[in-house]
Structure formats: C-alpha cells, structure tokens
Length: 112
Image (cartoon, rainbow, N blue to C red):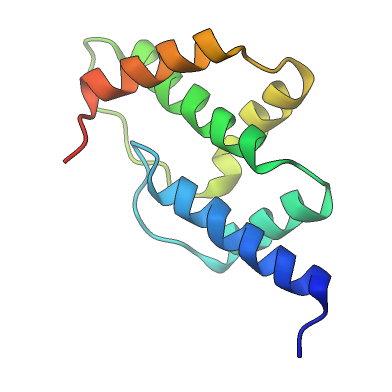
C-alpha cells in the first residue's frame, strides 16, 4: 500500500500532466522528465491552480508573440513552463487577466 503522501503526489503528477497535455502548443507526448518535473512541483508545494494559470499564461504569450509570423515549434517538455510557474507564484494574475488569456487561447485554438 502506498503512503498517503505518495498517493497525493501521484494524483498531483497525473493532474499536472493532464493540464500540460491540454495546453495548446504542446507536442502531446509525456516523457519521464515531465513526470519528474511535476513531482518536483509537488515536493515544492506548488498549488495546482498556479500550474494551470502558468500554462494558460505561457500559451497565450506564445500566441501574442507569434502574431503573424510562421508557426512556432511545439513545446516538447513541461520544464518549458518553469519560469511562468515562478512568475505566477510571485505575481499571481487576477481572475480577469486569466479570463482574458483564456479568451485569447480560445480564439486561436477553439475546442474541438
């Protein structure tokens, strides 16, 4: 039987991976390094909402920065989001800002 913290850690890692794979611009493949990084986020006490907001922030920024240029290459690893996660932890975006970022993403990556 797993220790309760291990169970919580495994659940957290699965949720981070699910959020990562649902992020526009991500390759769609999960590597061991991605799972390790998600586990490190759990160990550091990073809340899931911060991870989710950081993924949203980074995806929307890629849309804004890309503008009219050629398509960007896919994001190959979860660690790509390390800086946006730190940013969200130090200066959390408000609900309105997150809603606006989600609207931007929805315009460029409509749900299937």
